[in-house]
Structure formats: C-alpha cells, structure tokens
Amino acid sequence: MTVRIERAAGGVVVRQRNGAREVLLIDDQYGKVSFPKGHLEPGESWEQAALREVQEETGVIARIAGDVGRVEYRIERGGEPVRKQVRLFLMIAEDGSEPVHQAEEVNGAYFLPWDEAKRRHDGQGYANWRFALDKAESLLAWRDGRLEEAWRALGPDAPWDDLVAAWQVAEPVARRLLQACRDELAVTFPELRLPDPGHVSLPREVEDDAVRKAIESTLLKPEASEIDVANLCLEAVNHGLPMVCVSPRHVPLAKRVLAQSGVRVCTVIGFPHGTQTVNAMRQEAIEAVAAGADEIDMVGPIGALAEGDVWTYAQAVRAVVEAASLKSPAVPVKVILETSALTPDAVVKGALVSAAAGADFVKTSTGYHAAGARPADVALMALAVGGMAGVKASGGIRTPGAARHLLRFGADRLGTSSALKLLDEA
Image 1 (cartoon, rainbow, N blue to C red):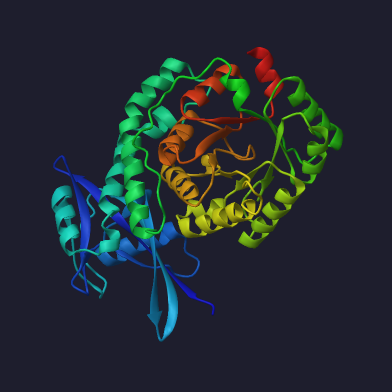
Image 2 (image 1 turned 90 degrees about the vertical axis):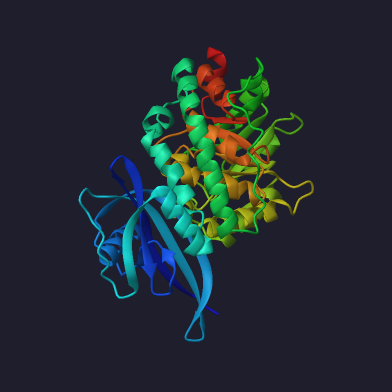
C-alpha cells in the first residue's frame, strides 16, 4: 500500500530582549504548548513554509539560523495511513516583531525567557519535541561563538597552532552539539544503538609511519584507463601502500595486478552523488563483493541527510552493509557523508546514523564537491562515532603536514590521489 506523506515545518524562534534570550511559544487548540508550525504549500521549500507559518500563526517575522531537527510518525486520516514529517528550524525574530496570534488553531502566542520557556514546554508540550530547545541552544552556542568561521573553515594545511587554538574553543560546543543530536535521534529514531563519544580525546598522537599505513591510493577519474589503474596498483606495491581505491569496473583488473601482493582493493558505489535507489546500491554492493572488492566506500543519499531524513539514510546504509555481509568475513563498508554539502549538525547525525546502521567507517568526501577533508569535520565525525567506527579523511590531502593534521584530529584512513607526491615530500 502506498503511504501518503504530509509535511509540516515551523520554528524555534528566539530573540534578545533586555540582555536575555527569549523563545516564542504558542498555545495550540489541543491545550498543548508548542512551536509555530504548519503544512507545506505546493511549491514551497521547508524553509519558506517555516517562515510563512511563523508569520501566519504569530505575526512574528523571522529568519532561518539553523536546523533544529525533524520528527516522523504515522497517523491515520480518513482511515488511511499517513506518514507525517515535521521539521523545525532555529529562527531569529526581527527586531520589533511582536507576537499576535492570528491562526484559528492557535490560542495564544508569546515570548518567554529561555529557562521559563523550557520549563513550560517540558511540562505542557509534546514529548517528541522535548529535545528541541536543548538542540536550539547548542546551535546558538555554535553560532554565537562564530565557530563556523573560526574552526570549520580551517583547512588541513593551516598552521598547527591555529588548529589547536581553534579546537580548544570549539570542542566544548562540538560536544554539546553532539549530545543534542544524540538526544534528538534517541527520540526520533529510538531503535538505533548510538555510539558513545565519551572517551574520545583530540588531538591525539600519531606514529612516525602513520601516514603511509593510512593511505588509500585513489583513482576514480571517469577517464582513467586500464593502464592508469594498473600503474596505480604497481605504485602501491612498490611503495608499500596498504590499499588502492578504484571504480567498480576496474576491481577485477586491480585484483589481478595485485594478486599475492597483500595490497587490498577498495571500490565505490552510489558514486559520486548518492542519488541511486536503495535497491540499486544493494545490487552495486553485491556485484562489488562478487568481483573481489576488499572494502566498499558508499556515497550515502546526501539530499536525505541535508533535509534531516535520517530514516532514508539509515535504510541505504543498512542495505549496503547487509549486501557486504554476504561474504564471510563481511566486507567493510565506509559511508561517504560529503561534509562540505552539510551543516555541522548534519555531519554529526550522518556519522551517528551510519555507525549505528553497521558501517565500519565514515568518510568526509568524494572529491567531487566544493571542499575535501577539513580537520573540523574529521573531529566531529570522530567524536560522533566514538570508536564504534573508524574515520576516513578524503579530498585535497596533498602534503605530509595536512595528512598528519587529519590523523591527529581523528582520521584513521586517508584517501588521496596524490599518494606518491605526499610520500616523496614526507
């Protein structure tokens, strides 16, 4: 049976008044305290619907500042099952914008000081949104600390002292964001066994030969020839590299060239955008295992993660993990998040969900998006998986210094198309 989907959006709207932060709440028609939200109209985006609903229900004009989270549940309407999706954004009220409840389903709209709003919502609100104010507070801490500029923008070639100084500021806020994401998923996706980040300490020490041991020498250009792939494999053998990563059609060739060498072969599926169906990804994984791939890097459905659809994301990861388990021992699976396309919040949730769904590693990038591996994203991923999975940094790693920086901030593997250059300079 086809299940109809209904989508709604709204917001946790905040403002500063007399030096204190306040939250916009509504009293709804069911006697509950909640946040302004309502259905998406045809042609609207999530964000447009959220802004419109806030203004229509309360008269407040606001702007989007972050993504608080998304809840899904099943309801019945007219005797038919409906999949309800509700998404809340963090929103900032414009100066002078005062609440006046306007919609028929809203009995009151008002700003309250943060702590008072939290107490009222905890006591009279909906249980499945109980995480929302804690999540909004963690996003505000990230925003107010300007950590996007001060930390996440730093690349792996940034001076080490700058990276360490930025991390000292960012770490407590990153851990707060991580805990808020875990609380969100515990409510919205309770069947997941989420990793525990408590024992992860960064930055960490790395061994002198750690870079060589971590390298996966990569050739995924669509124009790569069989000669190019064979040469890549021979270079890996001659320089003692542990793994090569090639396109699916080149796996049999790489296995032949590398036979008896000890160098393993990784391949990619769902590459490079993660837009294939779940069944297509499953079939790709089955064929990759049959061809002899020793490891699989899958691109998760990036669009699903970008809009908070962790259910669709987990479904894709599970399908590939199950296909990779058809071989004994199971073929390890790495999930490529494409971190430069995601907010820090989505990076954390993608890593949490991937590890909980059975992935062996999470990975930063395909190399086909705006940016590659950044220490901030690697650190967020390492905290999120908490040792339950490894972390692979990939994209734009071209110097020994960058490679070591990424390893010290939590990477276990390094995907690079510049392996020989990196080793020669080292």
